[in-house]
Image (cartoon, rainbow, N blue to C red; front, top):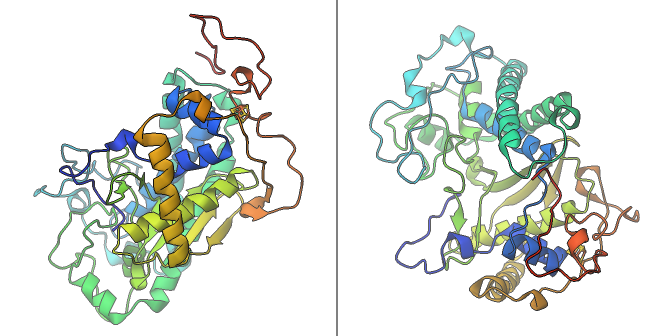
Length: 408
Ligand code: SF4
């Protein structure tokens, strides 16, 4: 299951003291950097590019949630009503009225895409429509942020955003095509009867159904492949951070972007709205290995089948080797030890030395490169002006304040 909720009776750690992949990667990049961001809570300057990535991912997820059996390509972006949520902000398991998809009439079959190209055309229309709205919403969020930096109009390249969103749709269409050719009769029949996962892929429908309303007869249709291939992702209407996978001992958590489950195979995909040619591509590999551990530890020691990073700006998919059982055990031991060091009790600044790891080089698509990085980690660090190793050589005056970068 892509979501694993904490056990309220056993969770003595709580959501704010769990370790996450981003914390681990920050610590490994530089312990002092971790201290600044996770203990002193310095917030990095909120540049538009951070918001753009969220907009592109959200536009893709909103498109995947829809179906061309209900929605024409030119329909408004808000055609689906909001998903009903429970008190915790998750899609409501007890909701008994009509879900958003059930409030729309099924289109005549003559309006459905009849081949892969027309399905892709429909999806492209939908993602463009959603992206325009998501970008505008993010621009408003950015404007309101008290740590905003940069210039939205100059820094956001809308055409580049559209290209990334279309690339994401293209990557998903490969799954649809594969599903069309490979899905088993057993899986197809089970879907037609209305079988749902405990955490279904968000499709505007509820948790249970008696026969799928879009089921057809005979061999699998294009619409059925679109429905069956749909991955799990966080419903864009859900409250943030409510759909995490939490380790059974509660000390680690993560939130997957996409989890494909058709064909009896589980694949975790992380979406990156970037080229993948920076030091961070090294972090992403480690993030996926930690996700593989999280999956294993929340699925009775069953390994995930595949791990992928989608670099949307490079139009490239990077496949990450799934760690062996021995590697997973080692990852778990290291993570637990790190949680104990960092989160069980907050370490002092002395225990978080300014020791930056060397920068790594990657080409587009996260391909490792031999090139020497242009900048050192300290040269590109947001906190170099308050860090001794970054060049800050003054004593902080009692009662003084740091002025952090960004329009505060
Ligand atoms: S300036 Fe260098 S040493 Fe200091 S926090 Fe940043 S990366 Fe670490």
